[in-house]
Each structure stands twice: as structure tokens, then as C-alpha cells.
Length: 288
Image (tube, rainbow, N blue to C red; front, side):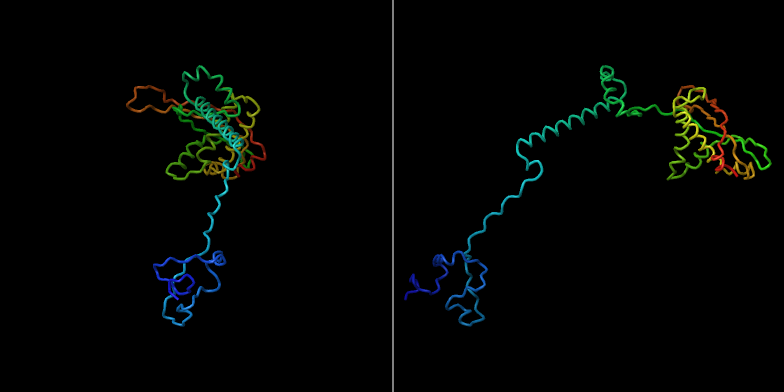
């Protein structure tokens, strides 16, 4: 029969249109277990050197993969999306209002704070109270040093009163040149004195319930510092017991720069506290 006969099984030329596959072959998978070998092909004829004719894929194309499931707010229904958007808007407005109120509270006095200062204070106090100033803080223009002396009872029963020890100067020498000074050296003594001053009046009388607490806190620091002081050990022979302590502050103004015309007094002033008797349990940690 002719090679172009429709009923022929002969191989078609490269330019001849390929006949559609029978229905039984259309659904067959591409990677079938049985090789597609036609009569007269090199595989059947046993010619290993011949290259097989490429076979067109007859399988149906795979459908497109389904879209990824929506997550987050997009997975909600439109009604709930509107609710979430409104909730986020309310939170954003509340945060902006709070930041604005805090800014006005710590900022210097201005037209807004003069007109609405009461509303700002109602918002800030007491939950969001601020105890610092953001703009142009008033720097400390005084040098305050804390000094202490002690009454030490020796082995013979006699009480010796030591000289004044400048604990602030000792902390300053320990900090000077130290790249990583301890928090104790920088703040313990200063914060203890600020705590005492804030809870006592000008006559050194406690004001409020925290007055006695500030006294005991400052006194314990003095005893511990004297216990570690080599000068006190040398003065008492290392065998004394601290019976009482007295604290004072020395305040002097910071001198103005040379180019300034400001005139300030450089004479120091002292605030001397009464003697405090050291309880026995605290004295055990004192000089021995």
C-alpha cells in the first residue's frame, strides 16, 4: 500500500501531519511503563546505533495549581475586616494622643500648655508621671560631697572620734580614668543623699513615712564604707567597733568660665546631720 495511505502503519515523513491518537491512547500517561515502540523502529529491528524517533506527549495538560489560601486579615470576611481596621485606627489615634500629651508634659511652658495644662496633667497623672525634662534641663551647678565621721569604741572601752572622711572624693578617684566604673561608685552615695534630702526638711526632721527609711539606708552605707576604709582601720588599730556616725554635706558652687562675667561665691556651705547611733547588728559589720 501507499505510504500515505490512512490505513498504513508505515512511518510518516517529518513534514506529514500526525494522525490523532485513538481514544484509548489519549488518556494514557506520558511516562508509561511500556515503551512506545512501533513496528520497524530501530529498537524492534535490533539496531542499537540508531536513534529512536521522538514521540509527542499525548497526555492532557495538568490544570493550574490552586491559589494559595489567604491568611491574616485578608482571610476574614469583609465585615470583620472593617471591624479590625476600625480597631487599629482607634489604637493608632490613642498612641498618637498619648505621645502628644507626654511631649507637652515634658516640654517647656508654651502656649498650648498654658491653655490646656490642666487637661495634660489629668492625662499624665498619676499613671504616666514623668520626673525628667526633655528640653534644656537645668544642669547641676554645684559640687556636693558627702562626708562622714564615726565614734569608735576601742578594746579599752574608750570612744574615739575620727576625722571627717570625704566619701565622694574617694568615689571620684575610683571613677577617674576607669573606663568601666561600677554603678555603686557612680550612684550609690549620691542617690542615698538625694533620698534623704527629699524626705527631710531643712531642720533634718523626717517628712512622711519614708523619712526613717532614708535615715537607716544612709546610715548603713556609712557603716559599710567606714568598714572598708583603710584610713579608719589605721586610726583605730583595726580593733574598734563603730558606735555612732555623723554625716554632713559640703556644697560649693561651680566656678563660671573665665570668659563669663558672672560672679558666684566659691565659699562652701555645710549641712551637718545629728549623730546617729549604730544598732548592734549593724555595728557588727563595722571596723574591728
